[in-house]
Length: 527
Image 1 (cartoon, rainbow, N blue to C red):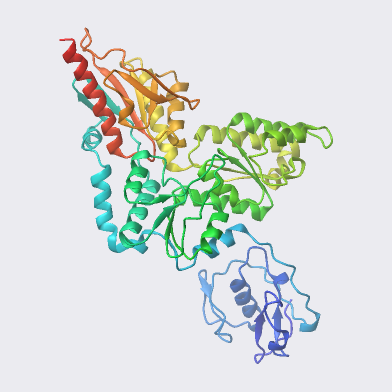
Image 2: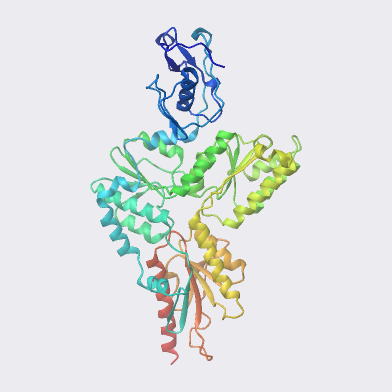
């Protein structure tokens, strides 16, 4: 309803009387209170809309915005709501706002806005060209470029056919992270450098940083770190996985420059769990609770529980459906998840409203299966009509992870095609502690294709053995090629090749060169 208003009166929007002195507000003012604002309407929109309602005059109106003639100091803004309500009250009758909730995202953003918190390529634009050239020289591969130029991503070398996955290797986020790290080293050549974790999970890249005298912060098995070596004026790099909020707060007090190389896809997950906090949801994180990325993500959550696979997700679903207060199931549940959930986690309370997020490098099909399981569980527990009140899901599966997994599926399809010779094996190249690389191995293993995950070319030896990581995480050595000599029927060895998102092309080339040399060596011996 329209209150009495004269053209000489001032319009005040006061979000909180804690921040404004009552005596500073003119006596004849119209006071706009937050309670009158429609949901999701910004303060600026509310003020403009109220001014329009009260004055009834505009000096321009369009779908894109309007400005008031009588109140030129009110900012123009988009017209977002049609139902505008305004109240005029005596200042003495206005009650103070309740304390506002502190969101973890706001704390992170406040730190990130400071001048010594450096992120984005624009900060290092003066050295970008040189750094990009250095990365190309260190990590590029003539062999893989040759394969990519072929129509079917295949090349023949001697008696071997190599089939390269259509999507493989360095993702944009990893390249960005390395570029920022190298750029910082070029920009601050005299500074002492530290990094809070491995930059990425690849030995070649991390060895390059060791060579540049970057100090890798020591940590124990629980990821507890010793930051005592960091001094004022040093430069500290945050890896592609990000850093925990506590680490960011601690570094903020140290007087250091922080170079943030966090992958934007990881930050996207943080925005999702922020939405969970705003909605009062518990974040169900599909990830490994001690993985660096998940450590950072859960630090951005108010309430969370990590599930590493579908089996643990089924434990959560079973509790939601079948557990009752006092039946003892909560104790057993918390004993299993004691290291994977937030402090003071109460499954009877915190599993009534949930949202799903994931470690960006997890197996996409499993994440989707977990999402479907949780949706069905919520509908069974609370009814389909109430699902939006109890469940929220936003796709946080990294595009780079997804397309690399899809490309390995294509290699497996080639193996299973009865019209073509099957692959002899699939070689997966990437760090042994690389989660996304480990999930690439799972695909051919589940499809029954002989496959090996190696972390460097030295895993393949002249004795025809291979050191590789199994899907269970064991590192074993076994005989490699069962047929290294030319086949009697004239057919060639057919090897599928892929690599993790943190693996340089040069690393893959070195591994393929080892296989080529191995085949030549055994052919020479047996001639």
